[in-house]
Length: 226
Ligand code: NI
Ligand code: MN
Image 1 (tube, protein in one colour):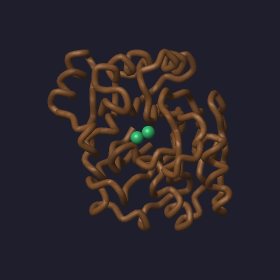
Image 2 (cartoon, protein in one colour):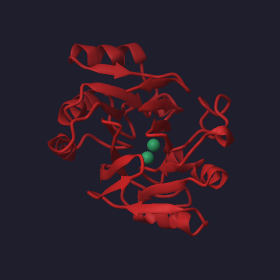
Image 3 (cartoon, rainbow, N blue to C red):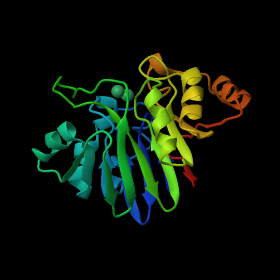
């Protein structure tokens, strides 16, 4: 499983020969818009955690360019189905076996409206099991006790957690989240894109290190292999 970071919560995952994009927000991200051409991205699936603009901005253009299927909660899936895009609706607690692995849509504590104010369902995160590797993409969320449910069923290899504070968990809560999901290897996301979520990288990494955990922060376009 190869994971590439494109800024904010935008990720590309290559697993079992399939290309998955998560929360594509690139053309409007000052940190990534000049580094990544959305029309060159490959996608078989686009996973959307919730309807906020900093998660869905490029989903429609990429889906129309690639023919990718959008996977999200029911309300977001219907929003894109009316635009002629192929969708797979899910909801909280549900699993589905895709051709690349198993996906579960899990709880997040946040909000979820489209940029025009229309209802985007309840926000979520994804647990993905594929190629004998298991990852948790928290999406935008507060620290929540529901995270403790995840390791009861899935031994995670990587937790992808928001760390930028203000709109989501900050560093201190993400360290607790890492304990709740029983995964000490964390990829930080949802930081630095806007003034409200700028963080000190060295301080963030030191806090994780001092807690016996490993925080990875990737450059735009940088990848890790699991
Ligand atoms: Ni959000
Ligand atoms: Mn966000």
